[in-house]
Length: 553
Image (cartoon, rainbow, N blue to C red; front, top):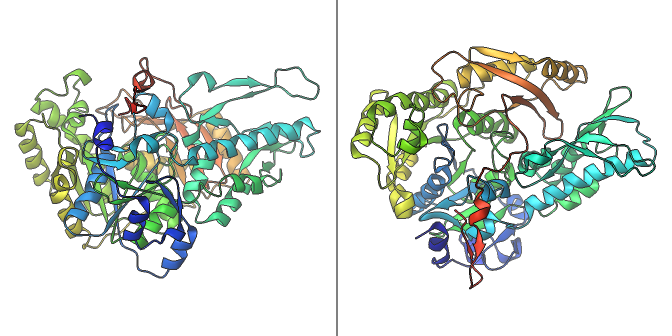
């Protein structure tokens, strides 16, 4: 039975009943049909003085192209905590339409560990991403309209891009304003995917709607003739942008197949953005339940690093436990085995691939100082010999391990992980910083590259260095760094899976996100607008004769 069939054949609780379980009244919910709702800001205010519950971060090793089942493990763990009698909640990101119709597919888990209604969540959901797209493009329209009507602000260089939430490589660089109408100024432009846009990051890092408005006003859209920043506030547009996002900033409430409450809110990519769900949803979850399970996108070198160095600092939180997800397939993939052969038993490749896992564990446990456990997302066809070998190797390094079968058995399949997480969460956890915010931009990039990736150094292009000097000149040096990098490798080369030879991180460009309050370093061959694969998932998605969506995975 496919994921979508499992989800469709499960009886769901009405969302008002899910809310009641969390002691949220129907008056504090904005209902989107029977099974979706937004939560009013008043709920957090009512719970403001309540002690926070434990925060569990789920991350992973560097993935294969189809991922490691990190979301499945997150959902299974939340269900598993509920299974052993704990009050748990999920805080996850919203899926982007780019991967849904591209290669990776949906982001609602799989098998018997899913959030539902999965079709709605994977497609338009409650319209948050559409609202972000509209706000982004309204700002673009206002910029060009201002220039058309005389350019009072004397904008000379526009750096703001349009966006859409689909993979479309054709839109990476475009010429606009080619109608030859009077006063229209042609210029080179481009598109980001919405989930990599600054407004998505702003929504996810804002504390409340007032902080959202402040950050939106701080967006730098370009520079004037004196090379001074021009902001959205200068264009008097921050109010309209906030109005478009007044509902999008409210967390969405759904449920798992086992009726565990789930807050699904915000959706930045982790390879080109900061990869974490909203601060509002995470902090709300910590008030509503004893255990909040959240995840950070892709491998721990990307999502977890940004969670710890950007989100935790902004929100003043830290995880009590980190779960690092791995599969035998991915470990062998990073041990040099081709994709088509990773199902076959191969102890030698497994042993080599463990170096990827060990590096992530060292970063999380020894560098950041966190409590860490490895969760093996078990597949039915996994070799018992390989599993036993992995257990022995982890035991030698004093690394906790749990074999998780949530895809097959739901919460019961994550019972062992849930119990071990509860025990581990009672141990003291600290969060070390790997760079000082006052460090230079170059130093911050270098510290992340050397400490987290294991690079021997960095190389900064002439273009990137020029941008760095300019950012320093206008006074934005003291911001955290968000590195855009391939998810498949510790290096910036997607084909360098094993990283056996010394490597450097190549910084091609640097982008100031003054509203989001971080600096993006573009490395390697990363693009902020992805492309579709040769055979996109869109070819398999359809509506059957009964009106049901099929083909989403």
